[in-house]
Length: 203
Image 1 (cartoon, rainbow, N blue to C red):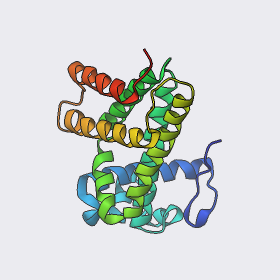
Image 2: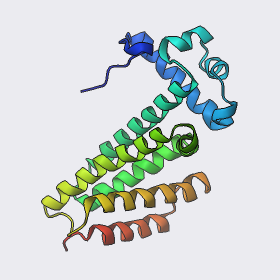
Image 3: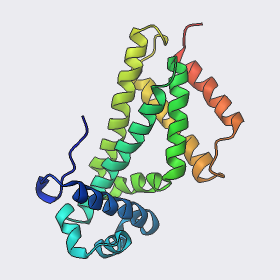
């Protein structure tokens, strides 16, 4: 079931209103990534979105409100991309690798993800925790189900989920953000070896 977009005060939005709200979020993604939270402003966000400043307050109560919602939005989109890709795997190992590929693609298309999440540590610590716990929650459940089906070894699903999340995040930083935007084949091969060791899939 898809979530209903809401504006300030929780009012349900029309299709047109939802599009305007999304345009503001996309503008906020660019502005927060480029300028940082302190130097970003509602004026700069509305200018980037091509809407009047008064329009902003129909959808968000403050700069922090739009920042928090941006974290939720990026989190929702990266989880969706990874889940959709993983669902095409014929085994848990294949699903894992497809999920990593989707994460790397998302990072390449949304390099602001890293900077915004790191800003959250200081701007909105509760959203930093929200982001990682939402990622880990679904990941842990998927590994738990795979364990019950006998697709992985005697792993601790929660610990394994957090460890694999850390692996993906660091590799994305090194090879997508700091590299040329692509994960080299040798890195992907090493990632597969690491994932295989963590999951201990039956031979």
